[in-house]
Amino acid sequence: MKIILLLLVISIVGICAYLTHSVMQNQALVTKPVSMSHDDVARIKMLVKLHDPRRLRDGQVHRVSVNERDVNLMLASMLPFQERQRMAVMLSSGQADVLYTGLVAANDFGSYVNIALHLEQVGAVLQVKEVYLGDAKVPGWLLNPVIGLIDSILKQRVVEYRGAMESLRTVRVAQGRAEMVFQWEQALADKIQDRGRDFLLPPAERKRILAYYRRISELSSDLSGTPASLTQLLQPLFSLASERSANNGEYAEENRAVILALGLLVSGSSARHLSDHPEQLPPPPKRMKLRLHRRGDLAKHFVVSGAIAAAGGKGLADAIGVAKELDDSRGGTGFSFADLLADRSGVVLVERATGSQARQVQQRMAAQGLVEQDYMPSITLLPEGLMELEFKSNYKDLDSASYALVEDEIERRIGSLSVYW
Image (cartoon, rainbow, N blue to C red; front, side, top):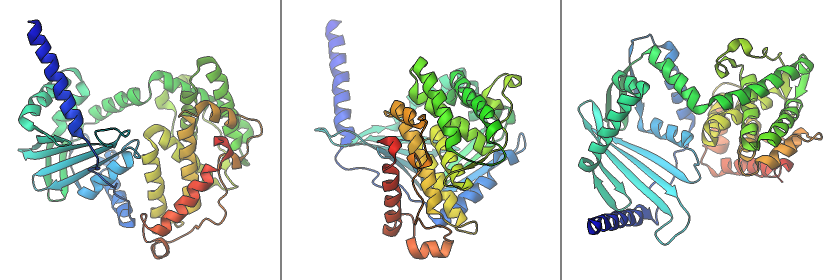
């Protein structure tokens, strides 16, 4: 018996060593993420409007059809830690390939983890045909029983998962396109929303955000009516975060709650979803005219992008910011690199305030002498008001050398901010 167990352990170790060696490679499988263009922005707006769940009736059967580029743009914007990992999807007739590359520390096996998942259409669903872990091929017949078992367990134990699978009618892929047909169930959507709230914002975090929302409500009495610098909210809020962190040691968590509470304020969202007892909520803050460099739009860009980054990650915040400016170039106020600077500044503040520099950034944002130039660079000489034809003429698109020059200048200015020294 001992010999059999020893052989089993040796076999498992051997398989793991083989897969580790196989999955690590010297070349990346996904080399470059897709870059958003002007035409993509118009299409994304159309898709969001067309598939807005608020327009669906309870019990309505709805069809969602997207192309390969749509899928890859979504992945590029939502995948966390984009500097260390990338994904790509390729759609063909009855088949789909999902490719993944992760960058790891240099070692003797290789610097990249490469995984490829090959799916094939079987009836109304997609099934795993094979998986490549680097050079090693794992056949679908070996994986599908495990996938089926996991699916069965989830259906038994997670009501929302079972409901979602029952509402899903078909998933089909064709050349360069994917289509999903499902039945909209409002009760199920509400359950998933509640479950998502508890997962993304646990009770302790909701309570933390409410503490800062209450402080904003108090501060708004003195700041309403006349234009006020965003600093007049940021400094006292981070001062409160410093007091709370001194007691609980949760510097990053308190800083994140500051930004999310400000995001509620600037976006005009209700705080009702943060409490199971809405009657105990503080009164809504009074209307304030917040400014950054004397401009309300910059304050809004800074806070909203920071809140998106705090809730959904840097990639999503950056993508939304760029998409907004591209959309403006089609007929709004025009593409503004100043707005983009405010977007990126808000995102970087969140990155630093919730990372290894959390305590240091908190202390500097809480300092009495805090001024706008400490956390938001000057917008001097950054191009603004560029309409679509002018933007394309000067910068062609988001992966052009001329666009990269302005982006580098934005990053240089943000990198010089005293809050991060």
